Image (tube, rainbow, N blue to C red; front, side, top):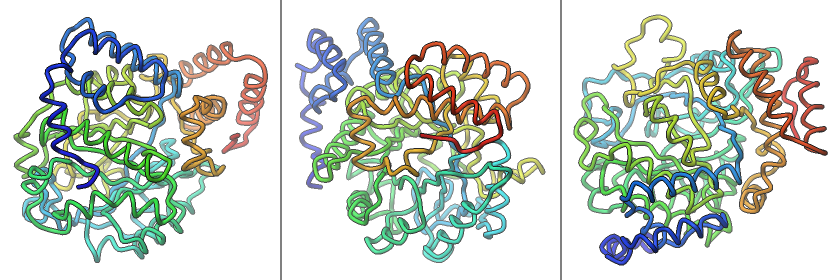
Length: 463
């Protein structure tokens, strides 16, 4: 494809000059500017193996993330509405030829039940996920599901931003999807390596590499402001995949003036009757995974890096330190699993992949707060038209924090008042008090005013 230049990537991976420690250290120093890196510079950082330089890399990634996004971690949960799929991806339990998986598509009423469950745990942001099926996951169904989810309001608590992860659409259908009031549109290329892509997608619409690759172009052309890209690490050399992701981000930024709103970094995990998932062709060890996250943060400092519950809690804590800014929590990856997991549903018979972090939202909130991170349920930018190029301008300039800090603290206070366990509430209130002491001037005054409003019973207070 015109912007995924495999020969260019391979030449960088084979360039012995990019193993030079002095060059690698210079690139780390350059990253302090938060202006991003060239592909060659990113390739040099991916070659780091020296423990001392790795520590410098990780420290710089944390520094850059906090310079732009502060200590905030945005929380969300996926909501799977169908596991029917016409594709045959060798790494996915939803693949068409998997006769062991139990198939299920939720009704609109069942989708509302799932969303209500999430609202009552404190979630404010959902990622709607559907397998690719022209009949079961058509636009009419998705539109009705989104409308029903947005209609839920329980004492001022509701889903305030609904992002969507579906198959690539036509330009016309992307325009229709935008009309449903979605937030970010997500679609992962899975692997940018053409030969590997063809091997992993033997049949179904997803076997068309180019149709999927240009999905983000069509989404942006249709007027969707925010898009999220990603790769499934473990299918090919993680260094190739990382550089290709960065090429994709640069191409979007060049053509449309905005890079990806988010980059997701899923790693292959075991999945029922999915051969590539049970035996990853290029398994990525934890240290290499941590390194590639840090490199993405330094290369595209403005983007949100999403970490799912595929990973174990211990590793998730380490990855918070190197640039992750959004995390799922309390997740389920099977249709109907939120409500029915309380009724002994065998999730493994319906889920897309196995989870590494099974903790509840409250447990995750307590943990990250104890580590010094601020849980954020903020969705204000989407509803204040701070999307697309407006958001990118704020993020790239480092000014997004002036808005995000008050909004994050107000949403956290709302969570603590309405949903937190007693222990989490105690830890969270103490954390907010400490964070307020760090503020001064107008930001402090506005933040205190918003928290007072929340404590007085107002909900959905934001700048």
